[in-house]
Image (cartoon, rainbow, N blue to C red):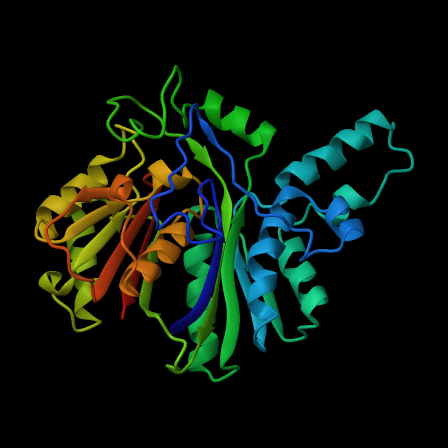
Length: 347
């Protein structure tokens, strides 16, 4: 599966070239809010006013891509996309005593609202689905797309993810210990020996093709996901994943790890790096975008551009072994040490 175009809205300036040019936003506290572009030239004002944040970011990242090319389907992944509007609608039921409600929040609250809006705005009538699988939603979307291409049900698709920070959900996760407390910034997030991380949000979108073309700049070679790995199984699983793609650990030039600063679960990443990838470059991304269920989409966007020759921002470098452009990158991310996703990128 070949990537020919991409877009990303995140807590960094990723919608233009600023991120790879070293323009890094330092965040404070436990919420890394997305830096959104001006949507005025892209989305009509009347429509934009009714959009929730998740829909706005998803359309803002996806629509510029599908305006350039003809796509045959839209496949997205999200865990909490549209949750803020959903809760607003539920609160309206209470506030209006189950009377006449405004439909806007309800219409924008479903997870598939982003894919639906993109299809309507681009007049795409093909395959359209949204995967809602918590920390494996983006990996599921990639697998779905790879199967569609393999079955020749289309040759060009939009695949991506959307996530937003909902006040209600954030407070629930904070009370459950998901996020750090006290004063900290994104600069020391990964080095604090304490439980929890920081919440993030964003949208990453990709145009993918069945065949390599002149616009191709990276390739998704394979995807693997698991819900029930033990720590002892991690190294054999990664070895098996590489072997089925005829690769050895020495063929992996760089790994992008979901190191989040949570001292309860980061040892999964450290142990894997020590066991298999001590000679590879190691990059991080959650100090840039925060920790959220579909954060691996941001890592995929970053990894694809690194394969295309972009320079990794210094703040993302965990271990540097060489300076050449990598040919193979392995992305490993887990969600609360329960769901594990692996994405293999190639040139």
